[in-house]
Length: 129
Image (cartoon, rainbow, N blue to C red; front, side, top):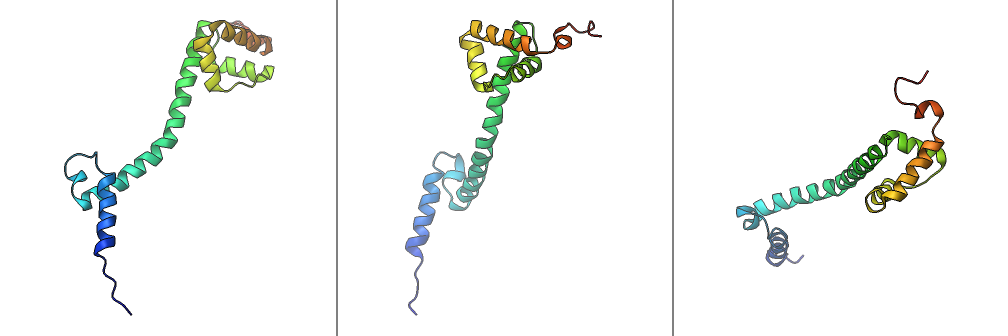
């Protein structure tokens, strides 16, 4: 069996790792072993944070909707409850966009949600029997 010389393949592998770690600071961009370790961590963080980003955007949309809802004298959870009861299917991303770009349309959605809520829920706190 012929002998396998690894020099070309090993250099190619090292070169790809060092190219990928080009923007890192210090030894992490120059030394193969450190660069490889940093590359593994970087890919792990990227994978994790691509998933975390979705939750972060949802939090942002909810806080925007809540702020706009409170400006219309209703809480976020009552608004969502009312919209579900009314059968309005609009996701939080679009609801937040409506709240920012078209406050009049958002106010009409709030009125639809209020109308769909039971009467005891619409009463201010302390007055419901």
